[in-house]
Length: 282
Image (cartoon, rainbow, N blue to C red; front, side, top):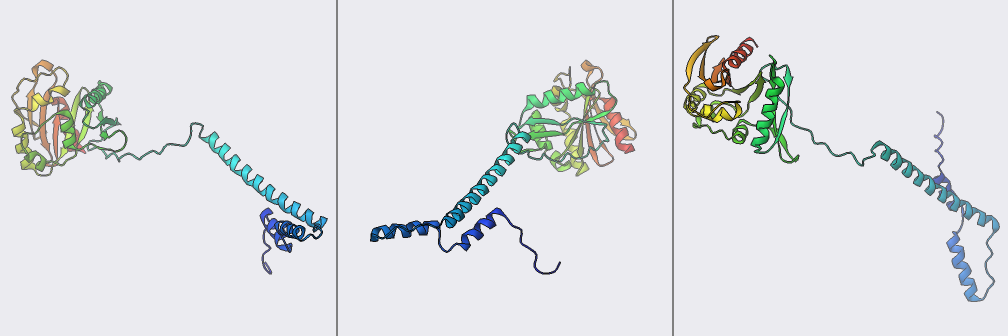
């Protein structure tokens, strides 16, 4: 394009240009007329053409204000139609849910308030009800929230604290990572803890056996807090420790270290077999 580009005309620009073309403003004329009256001289007569210029300036400015106000009003009207209930609330992103260790077919996230044991037991029971009669693993990640201000994935320590479970040996915390997977399988639960140091984890579990059935009785339907005896059983060349619970028929407390990688804790022998099958094959 040759030469300078032509400036785009606007109403505001026209108004400014008109003001610049005038030698004096309307206010100056009024002030000068007041001075002439004080001196006793005749009033200054304003040129009719100048009056029209001032009127045009006022009209343009008034039109600009109306146009701007109309634009703002239209924007607010459209915004109110899009959000009839008011401003959209700020949604805080939740924590990332890690992939399950066992390739679960279904996922059901549990969200509870901090240290809400009743809420957690209720949600876990709901997971069992949903998986009852299902041969698939249901992955149950647990999120702990502080009235919506902070939501995070539960650690193993927080899980045990909420369930009122205590580990007798501190070696447990040196033997496993402070993270876990929880699954529902039929009418049973599966807990999987990544192994950090196998000897510590194994020693801590053997020390835990004397009170483990009583502590897990609250999450096993029909189980009592009576002491039970653990026995060894070999499943797929893996040593599994099992304490059968006669009063519940199909339930049993069982634990094993699988593949030097995972500590598996289940509430039935059948669920332990299914868990080992999955972990070994995957």
